Image 1 (cartoon, helix red, strand yellow):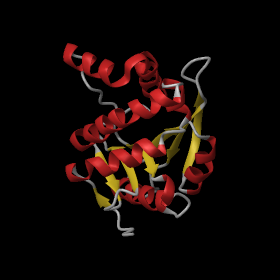
Image 2: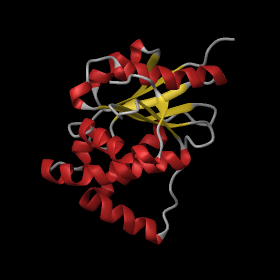
Image 3: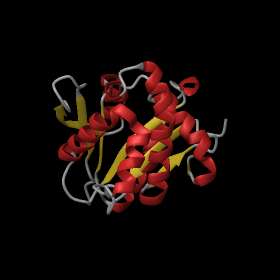
Image 4: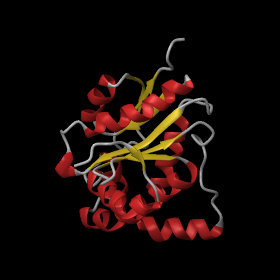
Length: 200
């Protein structure tokens, strides 16, 4: 396996989508949006394909050439950007998310609420390691590559996770918890974390 970290493009869409969908199959946030495992398995590939393509247009996608690991980043200027809710886009989201659309929209608003304000930061929207390649250091490798770009720009980075087991990994990479929150009473706990800008 090639462990080189590259900027992924449109030709990686199928492999990246498969990795994202597999890695988030048991994620607490996705389990809350799609409580039925069969519905989740059916809906996640479409959602992850859209997320990947959205970050090709408005963000930065880093991973290995074989997409064993994939990260979706929002660089400065796009951190708080959202797709305009035109009528065609609303129909697209409904077709993609089905009955999960309301929870997905609520979660999106809550993530926005708890992210640090302003655009002078990098935002790690998603990080995924293919299940058969987990515990091999790939997550840390690719996240460090993104953090290196933030360091070069002299800016902090932010993320949120709904997996408590991820908090220790992100702490080891320089992130600190700044908030914990729930999207709703029935929703999972989230940790919003920030890696501070380098001291000049």
